[in-house]
Image (cartoon, rainbow, N blue to C red; front, side):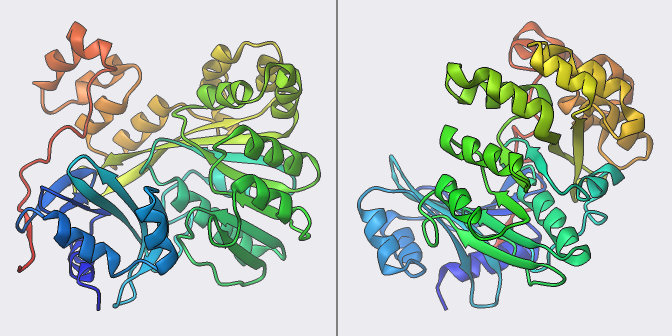
Length: 386
C-alpha cells in the first residue's frame, strides 16, 4: 500500500472534496469549500517526492522529471478513486487529489432543476456546463451521461482529462477515453469519435480553438455534444466561444451558437445552512429565438433579461435560483449574499451583519464584493499519526 493512501483514506473518511499535499506545509483537506490542515508535520521535499513516486507509472515519472505537470486518475488500495494533479513550485513539489464518489450521482440527487433532465432528450446540438474550477461541472455531466445510459440506446463516447466517474454500460454503450493515455488531445479525440458512429460525444473541456471547432462540427452533423468551459455565466460563455476563433470565423460561430447551442448551465456551490455540505445553484440559458437573435446582432449583454423572463421555459438567473433556495432554507444566507449579483436583494437575509459594511466598501466593490472562501474557519483539524 502506498504511504500516500493514509492521507487519502483520512480525507475521504472526513468527507472532504480534495486533499492537498505540498512541501513546507502540513496536508490540507478541503471541507465544504474551506481548507483545513491535518495535524501532521510540515511535509519535506524528499518525503513528498517519495510519496508521489510510489503512485506514478514509469512514463509519468519521466514526464515529471522533464518538468511537465501530471494529470491522471488514481485508485488507492482501499478502492477510493481520485483525480490527481502533480506539479512543481518554488519550494518543491505539490499534489492535489480530487475525491471521486464510487457511484455515479443522479440528476435528482444533485438537486438540479427538472429542465436539466429534459435537456437530455435532445438528439443533436451542444449543451455546455460551465463554472469555475471545483464547482461540480464533471459531476453534473456524469449525471447527465448516466441518465442517457439508463434510458436510451446510444453510443456514448466520453473524452476526459483524466477519467473520473467510471460508467458501466447499461442500455447504452459508454466508451471512456483519457487524454494522454488514449488520445493526444481533445481535438483529436473528437475527430476520432466522429468516425466511431457516436450518438453522444462528451468533451471534457473546450480549451482551445481546434477543440471548439471540432465540437461545433460534431454538433452540426447530427450528434449531441456535451462539454465544459471555465466561464461564470451564459453571456461570458457565448463571448468566449466567439472570441476563441479567428475573426474571419466570427459570423460562422455566431450562426452555430444561434442554431445549435441548446443550453448553457452555469453552476456554483453554496454552503448549506448547517455548513456540512454544499448545494449546486445553477443559472440556465435556453437558446430561444429571442436569445438567438441577440447572439446574431451582437447584443449578448441583453441575454440576462431573457433568462429573467424565461422561467416558464426553465431559464433562471443566479439571483433567482439563490432566492428560491433561500426560501426553501437549502443554503446559508451569508454565503448566498457573497455569491449574489444584486446584493441589495439579499441584505435582509444576512445573519452576520459585519459582512454588510465590509462587502459594501469601495475596496470590496472593486474586488467583486468579497469572497466566501478566504478563511479556514474554526473547525477542528483532522489528525493522522506520523
